[in-house]
Image (tube, rainbow, N blue to C red; front, side):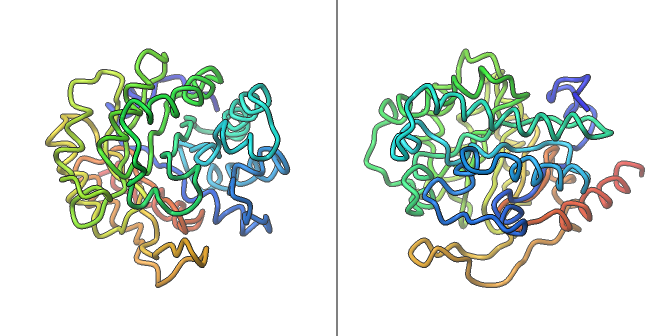
Length: 304
């Protein structure tokens, strides 16, 4: 169902359920994600699989779908021999596929166009440290073309997500300014700091006073980090928090595998909501079953 409210208006009225990890659902559907483009490769080779993954989350109760564009860039597509026009079309396709799944739902579902960090394009795990050796302006020039392409496709919001450092957040916010689409800003953190070591409060503060930013928070981090981070994001910015941690397992970039056990608990929704989170879901290794349980528990909380 196409939303009748803006996402910002919906957040002012209550808490919304985000989807979970797209890549793990695609793998559950039998998709091979060994390509350096990760799930974005299916924009070329298997778009119906992407739509099916979105649909699985809608059926679980997700109210916001994040597109398959996290690792989709002009540079990455160029390595596959695809020119700028085709890359632009594929970025738009990521929004269209999520919108198609959203409109088939029997409840309002918003579409968030994923804008991953520079390190996602490198496909070497560097989004988990952010040490690229690039200036803010260089990062802004990298991000602007795909932000413009995604915005042109008409998402409800841009998800500036898994950001490892405040410098890249600054670049993303500058690149998105004036694009006509609201944004949320979401860092990946460890021990109360960005992955590059900046204090989280300092990083969140970049979003304060920016009207286009409708939520600030964290994703793709250990669930144990999230409650304090949500409360801090709200305190520093005065905005709703967005929280969607991974399962707590660790990504081994060299071995291209997840290590450890899951610590994701949908029952944390009560703590997240109490801390000020209004967009709540999961990231890597969190699937439709988890999101379904989260949606059920959140509905109970909203009824109290």
